Length: 135
Image (cartoon, rainbow, N blue to C red; front, side, top):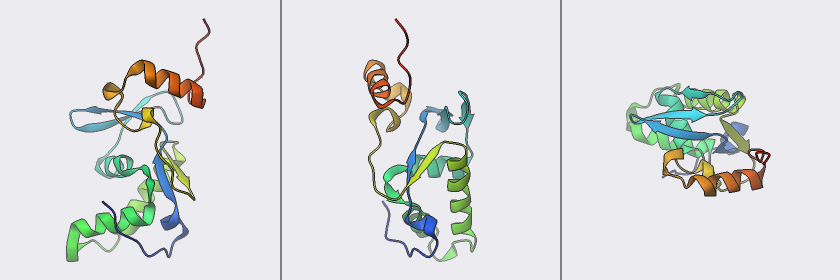
């Protein structure tokens, strides 16, 4: 999916990963959580970045991938736009940035409705992603 990137900006070397669960509603990403327990819709750029945030690719690789989709007609500010979206989503708690490659946990790897809810709950509790409910 991605190609290697020139890493002039330190952000280019960061791996980016989803930090919140999500759902698909009419082919649109709806984020569940973040800096508050809410549902948040994202624009086209946010959706592109969020769905690519698999923990296995760097921001620089994402920039190169998006640039390759435009061919020779890539807008001059394309890299800045992609990085701005990554930074903003990270600030809001929707993404994490890491120096090493990682794998997404089951409960962040696909839309909520595609998950086994019991499996997700157990894994989220075990990881400390959510607190177990008192019995």
